[in-house]
Amino acid sequence: GDSVTQMEGPVTLSEEAFLTINCTYTATGYPSLFWYVQYPGEGLQLLLKATKADDKGSNKGFEATYRKETTSFHLEKGSVQVSDSAVYFCALRREYGNKLVFGAGTILRVKS
Amino acid sequence: SQTIHQWPATLVQPVGSPLSLECTVEGTSNPNLYWYRQAAGRGLQLLFYSVGIGQISSEVPQNLSASRPQDRQFILSSKKLLLSDSGFYLCAAPRQGSGANVLTFGAGSRLTVL
Image 1 (cartoon, helix red, strand yellow):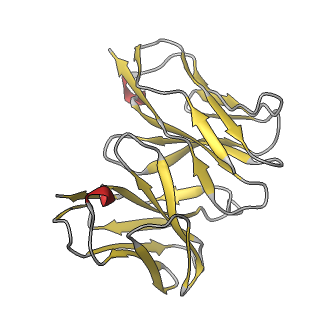
Image 2 (image 1 turned 45 degrees about the vertical axis):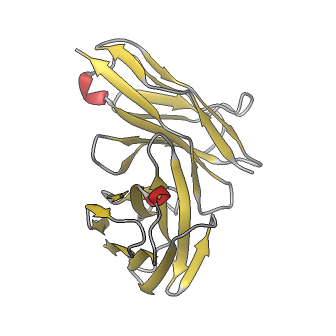
Image 3 (image 1 turned 30 degrees about the horizontal axis):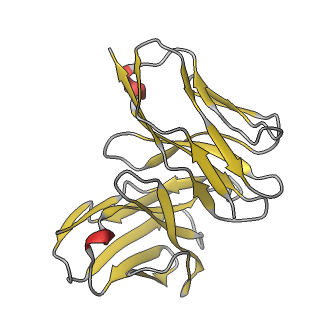
């Protein structure tokens, strides 16, 4: 079945450090890929998405590129801030489906 | 704009007691609705989804049930809670105009079963 695998956390970085959170997926066809963010005590918010191979999603300085050849959608940010501390979820939606499959989430902690 | 309301926000219940978590959606009609659970240290697990009134699909066998009595109301229930039912429950619906491609989530209901 469809699945999403994320790197285990927590990831602890200093402010202004470079961030990478790895995400790989297993799915048939051409799924849409997403990154959601969950700030402390809140629900999930869409951070960015990509709907086809080689698409790059970007938002708030975060980027992720849909790599069909490596079935990956790694999240990157050039310079993290303390306010980026949150849980990040990678997710996919099957090409003709209506359900999201989430990864386990990666906790990011940014220290000042 | 579309808004998802969940309540209660937090709940502490004894083992064996009943449960009712409510989700209502504003700003859209006939949406697909979803219940997810986020257990401590684990990712999001899809529990139920509904494509319309009275139509419920269960993704995993469990102690919970869901109902959709109205177009924009989705209820998660249990007759007798287990310790393992503790978690953060999130209701979600596709964002309007996204072609069902993006989910909007409620703020969640945190359930602790003692």
